[in-house]
Image (cartoon, rainbow, N blue to C red):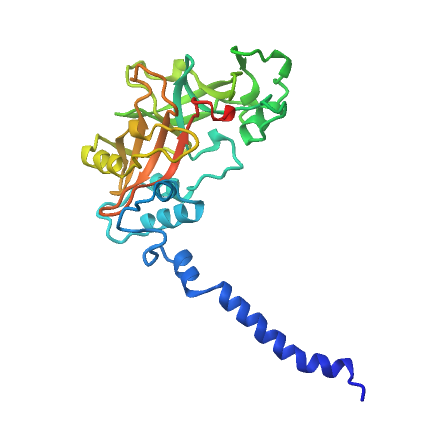
Amino acid sequence: MAVSKWKIAKYLFPLIVLIGVGLVSKSWSPQVIVGEASIIQSNQDFKPEKPNDCIEKWQYLFPNDSIISKITEREIWNPDRDVKPFDQNERLLSFLPRNENNILIQGPLMGVFDINGISPAVVDIGGIYGNSGSIRNTPDVQFLVDSKDFSGENLEYGKITNYPNVLNSLSPNEPIELSVHTSSYSYTSELSHMAYLTEACDDLIYYVFNTKTNKQTKDPILIAATLSIKIEFNSFPEVDKKFQNYLPKENCMDCPISLERMKSFGRLEGFDNLYFFSTDDLTSQERLNEPARGLVYMEEGKTPRFIWYHGVDLFGCACL
């Protein structure tokens, strides 16, 4: 006896629904929900003990965007804070993690460096004509290449090429101003132009500050921000010690970085667990593998985590 298609569908539909519900339940298990939904309850996101595995330690030091968002949300809404934080500091945290589709100077935070005599400048790895002969498609490289001021024919190995008019497309009527911070004070400075340096492994792209708008001091700029944030400038030896004690003693990374040369120079005002760190590249007599700046979350009894990090690879990982 023939069975109609409608009857087959009638009896199969409840079975399909049950199977689908079972698969969804399996995919969204309680472990996954707890691990992703609650920063306070999640042992996956925050472990009071120190991980022993080298790779696991690096993963804890540099969490993914989801975990960074949980950290910043927790800090903003922390009811135990004694001091009402400066409004711009809260806004800063709300913009972290940074949008990787933006160019560096669109913030909210950026490292400032003195590399190859161009100082001070926001610096990143370039790659317009890398080893493959193609463009390394990052927002900063693309921004420069797309500008009318750019000409690839002007690039020469080992030579710095300046582009004085590229930034006009972002702010045609007035210079771009950023809040800049040394290890002891803050002020406002203007960007002057962009520059590009072609090297053997990785090229460097620069957003150069106008030295006329910088304070004449021996205290160099370490970081810049798009917001007028407030920093409690100080050194924190105990925090530095805990940070260094956590770092893996063995090298399990493909490319060396310079975290062992990082020290605190301030704390984000109003937030007891958020410390600004910098490598000593400006005072060191040697060229570091990766000069860097960072904002580190360090809660008592828990592992340090970078919620923002800006390093410049000078080791040459592109050649490996």
